[in-house]
Length: 368
Image (cartoon, rainbow, N blue to C red; front, side, top):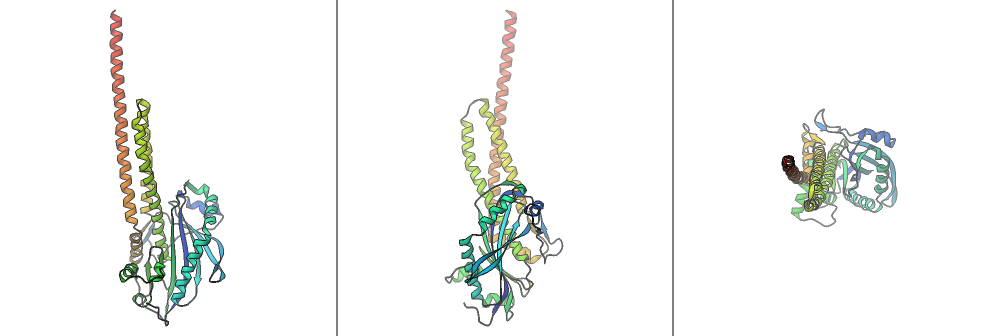
């Protein structure tokens, strides 16, 4: 399917983003003063009052622009960082594009992704931010988990097309998938199945690593909502990995504890149970913070976009997996706590019996 030559895309922007987990939590109030920058709290422009509820709105900071070779020439690319209260940082590099044919835009996006994955300007930037922000970080960590996503935003097409006509006349699949080969009809239907529209001139198509947004007013709300879903996914993946590692280690720790004998070995039951309780409490707390990071109530369109993004990235499945793992940790804690209690009761009974025997012996000795 070829884009008709009569229809040209009206200018917008391309943003290449990457998310990192860097800590258990970030003190957002300290981000601006620590970096010596003026922060901006995320605020959705189109949402009516109280139609969007944040537990803690993320903070945005502008970074130094990057000068990168794009399309055979050096182009200044805007850079920014977004900080999430639950310990995530998103670096973003964006550039505007003018009016032009859609195929050229697809090629430009492909080129930008290759460039950024080769140059990786974010590595040094992330390291610098984490070093400077250390006082604002709670329990810094380095999980190695990253999430990349590219946002392509446009104001529309010229001549003007209705949202439904864009899906019919413009081949969006190569842009969303990054695939050079033609996809099957079923695969194409799956890709475009995430397309949503509310007014007659807006549109969003959500992909695994790319999203295309048509917004005549150039408002970033849809991209911001998608970005929150990506941040939630990142954190859930991190804690799923952490729990998997803890459950493997738990089996070995329980085995070593049970091989021990005597009061000290029994004390280790209680110590292990307390560590499991602390782990359960910490992850349950952060899981709740992640789940409640963004609650969309009255804005129907943004609610649909947000829910679709969560489903696209299997966020509910990741969340359910974490809750199952937490149940295993809780059950292990209960079992170990019961064993520790039983062990204490056993030693208490032995102590009582010994005291009775000592008392009897003393009585007998007194009569001799």
